[in-house]
Amino acid sequence: MIGSERHKRATKEWESWMIEEKEDGYFEVKTERGNYLCRIQREKDGYRFSCSCQDFTYRASKENDLCKHGYGLIIADTMNTIQIHQADSPEKAKEHVRKMTEDQELILKVDDMDEELAIKETIEGVEPLVYTIQTKEGTKHVLSIRGWIQAMMIQGNIKVDVEFEEVGGKIIAKATGVDTKHNVSISAIAERYTRDEFKFTTLASKAVRNALKKLVLPAIEQKVIEEALTAKRVIILEQVE
Ligand SMILES: [Zn+2]
Image (cartoon, rainbow, N blue to C red; front, side):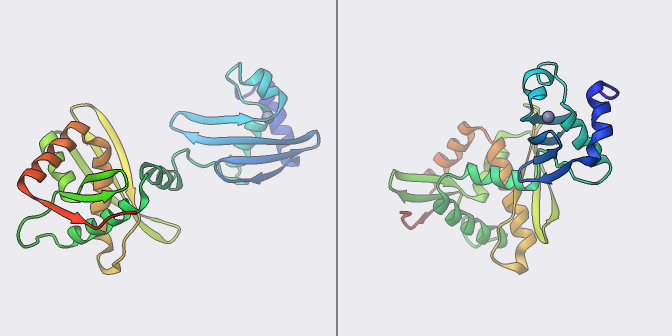
């Protein structure tokens, strides 16, 4: 608590500490009494915090309080000496997207095809809803970018919106999807494109697709796959090792 003994000690001592920022929300705090590893990240209603010190481990954490190192870091952040980052950073989001993709090669192939489809807004003939790919585990059917949109229409009650952000000099697209029926809101990003002249179209479409992947119910996804197979709205991709 602000004004507590821990907070008072932090106010007095923090300037004498050496604070070194590590990756992923970690800070090494070097004090006269020892070095401690803290992790602090900003969240919607406060901070996510842990510290390796005795006070936090045995007392503060049980009292739902921070140790003096935590208060010190928050003060240092307020004074712009360090920066406490959001728990949900663009890097986190990218990492999350990456973890969702188990079969990277297959995903990249589909991603490239989706890019082509996103660019050609209207293609002659029928647009494929599904990619069919032979893998070691058998035949896989994966919805194309058009397939995900089809699934969105069938499911209904989904709204998507896209905005662009610059992260480390790179443009990324962030899509926010809302399922108004189930009251779920999610966001997804896209960062990969190969043709610079179409980067906005590509990124926006892929971000929407990534958001839909999280909102579309598996049963609806399956329904679109089955319909596409029946209607032969399928592109067969080469084998993936
Ligand atoms: Zn501590």
